[in-house]
Structures are given as C-alpha cells and as structure tokens.
Image 1 (cartoon, helix red, strand yellow):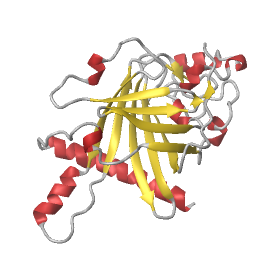
Image 2 (cartoon, one colour):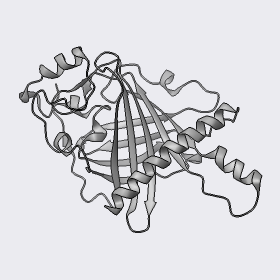
Image 3 (cartoon, helix red, strand yellow):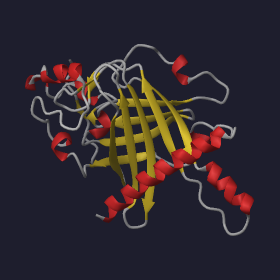
Length: 262
C-alpha cells in the first residue's frame, strides 16, 4: 500500500510538472535539450508491471463484448463485438495502444544519444522513441512512414525548470531538485487493440504518454506511464490510463513470449 501511495504521488507530481513546463514555454523559455545527455531522469534498466487496478482486463483476456470503461463510439462497439476468442494472443493486442497495460517486463536502454529503446518480453515488441535535435525537423520526418504496431514515436523531456529558476531568483536556501518526465507522442500506427478482447483503436489514433519516475528508499524505483489515446474513428472521447512499473535488480526473470501474427 505504501508503494501504491508513492505511485499516486508521482502522478500528481507529473501533472503539476507538465503544467509548470507549459507555463515556462509560454513566457518564451527555450525548449529543454534532447536525448540522453540532458536526461532529467534515468529510465534505463529492467522493469516489471505492477497491476494494481483493472485486473480483470489486464491479467486475463476479458469476455467478448466487455468494453466497460472504454469510451467507444458506435463504430468502435461494432468492431469490438466482431472479435472472436480464437483471435486471443494476436499481435494487435501488443501495439503501442495496449502494450504498456500488459503484464510484462520492459528493458529500457539507449540505442544512441537520441533514441531510447523499450523492449517487452510479453509479445516481444520493440519501441524506439526518437528525440529531435534543437532546430532540426521532427524525428518523424526521418523515420520510415510504413505503419507498424509501435508506430512512430517522438520524445521530449518535460521539466520543472520555470519553478526552479523562479526559486533561484528569490534567493536563499538550497535549490530544489529539478523534476523531469518524458513525453512521447506516437502516430503512424497500424490498427490495434486497447484490450486483448479486441477493443479497437484505428490507424488514425494518436497516443500520448507521460513517463514519471518516483524513487523511495524503502519502496525502490518506480515509474508511472500515463497514456492518452485520441482516436476519432473508434472513440467518443479520450481514453486515459496510468500503469505502474517497478525496477528489478537484473533481468533474471525476463521471459520473452511472442505474440501470434494476424
């Protein structure tokens, strides 16, 4: 329960930090530097999902037609109801819109200074998060445009720099820590499932994620990823979830399990 409370605190901090960062940019503040050299948090390592809510939809395949809490429109409901149990385990469930909700382990590492890599053992997926150099075109413009399950992901750091700088201007006392989080926006996706029972998102979906890290001397290292799915084709409004991951000391429990091709 203590760990869960710390995760909840992290969500609040992440939301506050994003607001502060937006205010700072509104005053003409320069964007934060990209990639590994300027990372405000370290997300590398092996992580395991800790399923503390939505257990019935995440730890097993829900029954056909169970779309509870997903704001599907009429077309989305039609597609969800067309799913068949024989399709269970297919790779559509492991696309960017659903993979972070899976009971899975992640390996996060830097492929290079501007590319953060996320590997999953569930479904054996690989995500590449691309940072842009200041003044350069969006990374999406230099990435293959073929639609994939993991799409094209553009990453940027969000920081509480405005609050930090204001504190220094006031003077007095030690400086507060610089909080930071990772924002990832993914487009160019293949159609996939938000849940294993075929609850759909379309190729028009835009998936935005916020990764916020929390460290506690007793609870260890955690991160929370808040995922916002916008899909004008199948959703009546945004679908928002938060998923918790705890850092593991090594990858001894890594268990790659492939998904089934369509």
